[in-house]
Figure 1 (tube, helix red, strand yellow):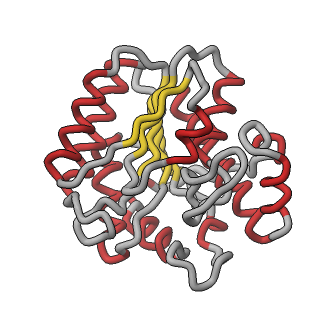
Figure 2: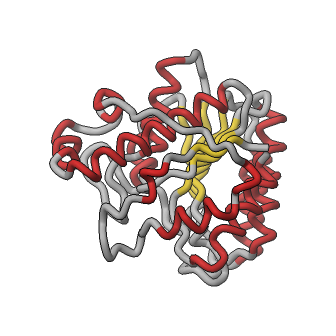
Length: 251
């Protein structure tokens, strides 16, 4: 059973009218009550953001005080998720705002800083790791994460891009099976690939299968060390049950 990392501040409406609203977290939280008590993170430090981002970008988000406070908690949640994984406890970071479109200099797509990249950089400073594999399963390419780690010899970023359900599932399964070494598996988990969401590809049971594939891959490669962070997913009527399906397979 994965630990769920969550803070009530993630449900603050820091961007009124945005497609990426607090209702997303409420829908998911209500579906994950069986995983209570949730793990409550501490806020990250500005120095953690600077592991990945230029000072100019950090200064820009600091100007929006309410948003910045939530961003620090989101990054703190990502770091806690990675640390739990390193202890052998699978974790799902139920965090907001998302982050995979933020690179060192800029951001877009409801993202401000890159939660995943910061967590990976932080965990690399705390542990002697040779190889971290990041999968991005959002409907949109995690271009920020990709650019951040492009020069890295310790981190591989894999995006899944497909036009139909069968190809998406086959790619995910095949790419996992091809991995021969890893010290940690991390997933930027978007649920906008859902059949009624903007991606229009996957059904609820697919998320359970994907979660179980990552569980088995982590057990094969790295003593079960794995964590996932929430990215996209906007079809509120089924968002909670889709995340629950993933967590049931993942844990």
